[in-house]
Length: 192
Image (cartoon, rainbow, N blue to C red; front, side, top):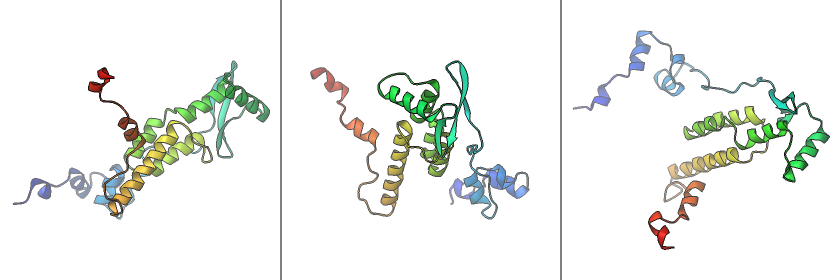
């Protein structure tokens, strides 16, 4: 006797056969499995390449930040002013709002959850496209974005090695795993 899963017909397949939906209405992986010859839709939320500059209120005036030569930069400030403000920030001063917005985009962007979700589902190319649309293709990554992309690359590399039989013990530990190794057990905390 065959299990139910072997004889059950997928509702998506039934709808496709009846002509009630087209493959482009399905998830791309489902469409590729059920209708291999037909192209499905592109990425679910592809970044907008021509989104234009973002606006930031800086010193009481609305300024723009955008991509120049592949790097996110302040468009309404001169190079000398930007260097001066970066030096001020390095000396623990407060830079202008435009540079703070650029720094926030690098360190804790609103799109970090989207990048993390894409990486968790194996969509490294989509995650990189989101990062490039946000910061530019030539930007130097720092903070949370760099950590997430680095962890994802290590995870994919270790999984590939494991699948190829080149490692003996499974995936390599991540930074999160290493951090948890040094923590004491709460039960032992009172005896220290």
